[in-house]
Length: 273
Image (cartoon, rainbow, N blue to C red; front, top):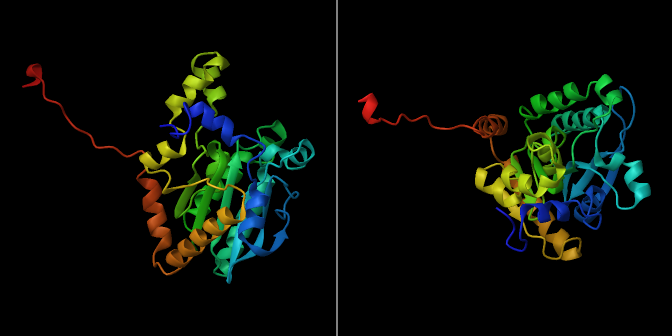
């Protein structure tokens, strides 16, 4: 289902990819104060595609983790075009473990076409790094809120989205594969990307209908002071609600276990009577 403002899901995809949209760093600066960035995975290096650290959400200490794409070509090159490498996911997990130790809510901003797929990343354990995040996030005993602000591509996005609440900006997308990648596999024709986008059910409205997302965030005034005030008020209310809830890890586990579930029915026909 497309945003009513647009004719097709693929138009939303193109909007989600726009370099004019706020990035992860913009969200951090707009919603939090006293941000202190923390670096490195303690194994290999500091992946600039993922920015994370400590901040204040009004008067609440939180851990903030964001996938950063950048706006200009220079910024996008510095941040790996928002395609995290294994050390980025390991840095994120290190910060999440630290958040649990000090009982801080975790807030993630997701905007990636997918994890970096170079052979060097695979040699350093890209798949296992993503899997470790999924495994450990499901059991963390502090609130986790993930906000999709642009693209949400495959495991690269899911590695920061095993959360108690998953929100999507109204022109964000979330999918197991890009429309272009899907089209090249199914039809052997990248020109079928627009058709693929419809079949993938990747818009925020689709995610809400499927129960993958909990809420769609209006983009009215996107990037302005009023927008950030609205968003941080929602984050504060959600963090307070989740902090007071007992049994977060169990509820989170049940939330993700029900995805893809279905009821099996038997249809009796004349020949089977």
